[in-house]
Length: 223
Image (cartoon, rainbow, N blue to C red; front, side):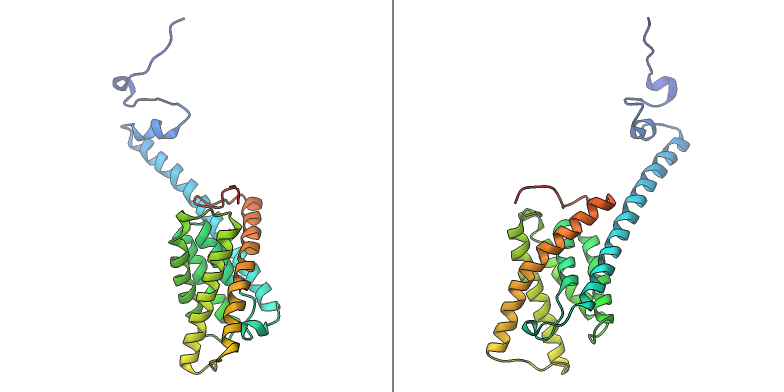
């Protein structure tokens, strides 16, 4: 039996793999084929992006409601459990930076709306936290509890200190001194280290359930 062969001169493209639209359209001289390949890639990217945004907004909404329902903690200077800040740190660790910045903006707006903080202040602070944590993303294991504890402690303590500093300048809060300030700082460090791994685990389960594992991060690696 003679085996059929296809050459570039016969049809205008080199069909290396008939099942892969890349080779069918990218090497084709047919404009309609090129447009079809672009449309397929665009639809796939749009579906993945919409799913990621939907998962992020769902996580932000759930944790915002949970954070608002929990009582304030005296050890944190009367602040709530920083679930939204922990979520921002998790996205900075396990997702790409643009997605993490989007989550930081949404989480900050919700946090400011549910408190007396000026609208947009938490978003700006969360954005700085994302940039700081993302700079360590390639140096740590994303699923490592130790990395989550350390970066969570630093991130939440940084966010809390920045928010407290800005509010104290405006006169909205009174600066504590001595042992009270030290207690708040220690509580932020320890609390952040404990909250971030918990939120990261919940986010990982949500991503797996919705089929939205990110391109960067949330990989099943050992601690």
